Image (cartoon, rainbow, N blue to C red; front, side, top):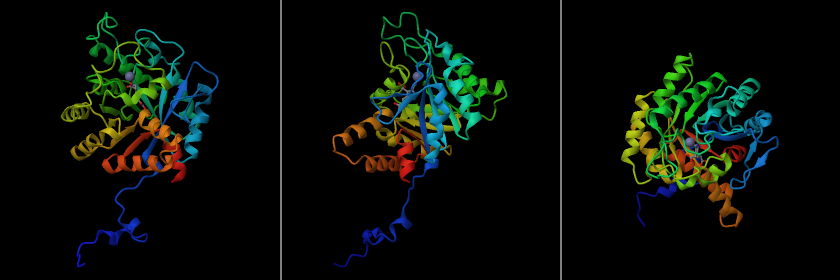
Length: 326
Ligand code: PBG
Ligand code: ZN
């Protein structure tokens, strides 16, 4: 055969690394960490094998374990000792995330990012202040503008405790602007905001909601998180967050939404983050447990794909395992 084009020429062992377009490294990864004020022992998270909720006193050790693998950044989620209608433990100076952040930032060199939302702190499990009678009427939902004040207070309390970056995840209109204002007002002008800019109402969050005890007590989140059918809407959402001062733009979940990751990558110069969520982690584990997939290989391929689609940063429950292999 007289073929001029033979792409296989560049697939031999010697040349493959030279022509590789994408690489993964531990410095791209952020490990989610769950801190639980209701326990003084570590509690394994059943739906997310290998992950645990740790007591506040163990937060530093947990983060050191992460850092030993080469991953330097963590995303903190908190389970508070008590919940109420407005989620007031979310902005308490002695709240679970505030205490953990204070300890981690004073005793380790980890880069600490905090999730800013209300769903783990409200007794109804929604990401904001509820409309009256929302429990009875599925058309009712969270009050947008009243929630903004609370998100500003939460972010400010995290920054005051030493958080390096804050990450609002509630999909409340105006959340980035409200948080930027609250941070700047207390002099935390250098604390960046990583916005969960395009966050979809996804069934892939199931295992996380067990882990963080943040499932809605009634209804769902479709009145604030995005419809999985929409891509153009993601561009609007991201544009709004950029206008309001978002520093890093996140797309969530990752694998089922790589078109959105690519779109954000191509449209903005900002760093793009993708959240490889709990369900994406759990499904690979479940299949591997059955012997149907090679866990290490599919985890690596998944994260490489997210990177290839354009993500600079990846939040993933595979962070430690992957960094260990790299
Ligand atoms: C809370 C929050 C969720 C996740 C991150 N922050 C759950 C949700 O929105 O219901 C999901 C993370 C995961 O599934 O790994 N707002
Ligand atoms: Zn939430």
